[in-house]
Image 1 (cartoon, rainbow, N blue to C red):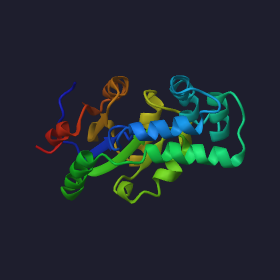
Image 2: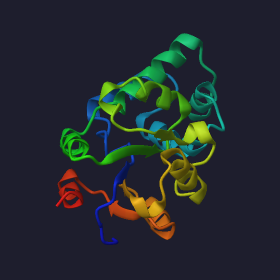
Image 3: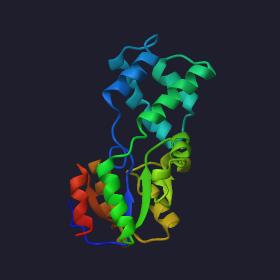
Length: 200
């Protein structure tokens, strides 16, 4: 991991950094919703296998779930799956948010860069706890995803910042490495206790 100098911008990943991973109950809930079509183990294999195209905006929500389940769905069932999927990725990590509040109060500028489908971005934009992050950049809106350099450059354009002004925080090593190559300071997130070094 590179050193982490103080920078005026902190750029956060979303999944399992700002938000918690889905709970066991939420995972079981999704499994129950698709039990007619798939067993749990097969569901999660396909859920993640098909996710990159969904994150890129290359497929719609309906197309994504048709690929996962191997069949098309009526609109009511599709809405139920999508709402559950969004909800289980919507729980803030309280320790991370405590740090975010401190950083915001200290004058740091905060932004968000997530590999997430555009419909997830639309849902997340309505969450009050994410209002301090501006811009909020989602791969599905741009058609490009981390760790591709282009998404970092487009994010910087929206931030009106240079890479040298930004510390990027992500839980995936390949994304951290990609940001380092472009000149970002970085923190490879493992748990929220690491974040204090950004203010110390």
